[in-house]
Amino acid sequence: MYLTTYRPAPPPCDVTDQDFIPASTDRLDRLGRAITFRTVSYEPGRGTPQELLKFAAFIQDSFPVVHSSPLVTREVVGNFSLLYRVEGTDGSLQPGLLAAHLDVVPVTEEPGWDAEPFSGQRKDGFVYGRGTIDDKHNVMGQLEALEFHLKRGHRPRRTLYLAYGHDEEVGGHDGAKKIGELLENRGVKLEFILDEGLTVTKGLVPGVGKKVALIGVTEKGSLTVKLSVRMKGGHGSMPEKESAIGVLSQAVTNLERNPQPNLWGSGPERDLAEHLATEMSLPHRVVSSNLWLFAPVMRWVMSLKAATNALCRTTTAVTRFHAGVKENVIAPEAVAIVNHRVHPRQTIQEVLDHDVRVIGDPRVQVQVVSSLVPAPVSPSGQECPAYMAVQETIQQVFPDSLVAPAVMIGNTDTRHYWKLTSAIYRFSPNVMGPGDLARFHGVNERISVRDYERTMNFYFHLMQNVDKPLVGRGHEHEGDL
Image (cartoon, rainbow, N blue to C red):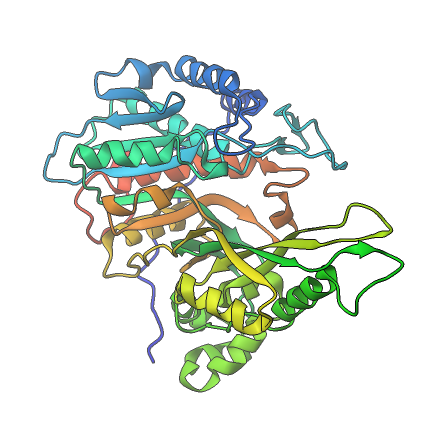
């Protein structure tokens, strides 16, 4: 095999640059205020419409240059989603699209928040609240970058779309789906899409001491199945040899003890290892440089932790179990819900066939509740100019980080944009360590002031880097143009 080599890194974005966007008090106040809008999505079709309307009005008031510019058009799609179009001067350049979402997940009663979850409070160098990393920081960071750009008199060459769905957390069917259909019906073809996604990681990639910025080039699919068993019920004093609960419990145990096959090395995770091989510690470097021999070892290593195991295979999570109504009544029915996140190299049918085979009991009925096939794998590396533009922007703003393609284990609104381009990437410009992963949809969601500053500058420099034909180049500041 070959080891991937990096092109020379561009000069880093620096606080002394004329085009640096500082995390000023007014910008931090706007982010904090954005967090106060309780734009919660509870389930498909059930959200918080009044909060979404107030958030949209706040956005309009907060970015006067964006909303008064003759270059910018704003549309409301699906009643609450927002679509901006920034008109470019060069019609030969296909448009790009930056995506994010306006909604957030609910806050549970779980204790432990260091600040009220919808306060947007700044404390000890962090901004706290639901949406600070999923996903209002991207919405506000993109708009701050565009406001800064236009205020400086910039006239873009490449047309740029900003798409903000309002129900991403529950599937995006009323928001991003309608945006995607609208653009498709208008015949829009895009050069690239960048949505929320993986981050700059610390201590998450085995054998690599440096930070690693992971760009999601695909998303795992999903499959939710319902397992049900119906058997004779009755009084608890006269039980049969087997019960519905016992049979279903054995089925669940079989699924957990016999996971889906480990497919590490057959998908984009192989590219991840090859990109980073030269930066790994010696034992890991030997393994990653000789995957033809050591792929089984790598599969075993990656399967040891939940976070890396999720990159290797279709995961199996038993998320719900229902049975029984009274302590002395034998339940005639038991039901379990199993959620799979499907590896890009597996089909929905293959996952389902594995479940049926492993359960091995015809009394257990297996019913598909919902499914989503894995996303197409977008090109990466030097043969793809759009990917390289994202990589170079990361290198500018996170100069101490390596960059590599990876698999996004969750799902984003990009599922509704597959027909618009083959170059779809998922990256959120903030730094996450092992202890930060639980903050997504969890307690103490927060973003550091420094990371929000990086977020604004990342989007600003990305807008610069894609505002020309996408060919190899170094970092440029406005003063260098």
